[in-house]
Image 1 (cartoon, rainbow, N blue to C red):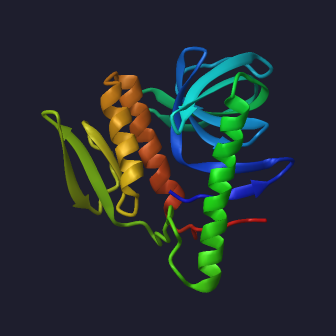
Image 2: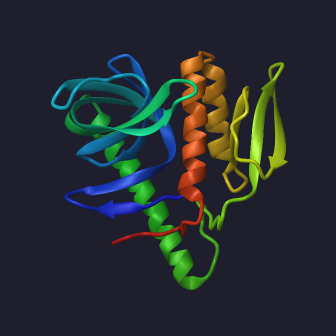
Length: 218
């Protein structure tokens, strides 16, 4: 999954691995983060623009407890067959409780450091210290991960379709990304959660196709 850093009013990073969390008890995934705001993916209605909300999550074993305000919500992808819709919402952070402000800052700095490492590697034509993204070209090689009788089965394929009991991602995904998706898929077997995992996997495929990766925008 490609990583980028943007400079708008504040620096924002796209997370290499979406972070699972709860927004007022509803399942969400944090996709982007800055010191001032977040972008989250969700399937349930989380509120209206201007509503306050509470985010509870963790990163690197440390708690993220944030008070936020909903700034915008848009439909990202609608599945007419299942009737389920994936939404993206932008949140502004009004308060970080406890040590959450430190954790959030370190999360952003960690992703910036990775982006800078990749920028330097691109300039010098050498491998990165810890490569996190790849040039996927057209994105025609995938791995299907299926949970069969409690065990994961991997199948190389050129079909990006999502299977009934698992998910399909680009063959370029790192082992860490795959483990994260598997753990999320197994950890909550409810249809809504597993549908969200499939949508995130499909989203990562569509985002990777034909887009140059390992980039840093100053």
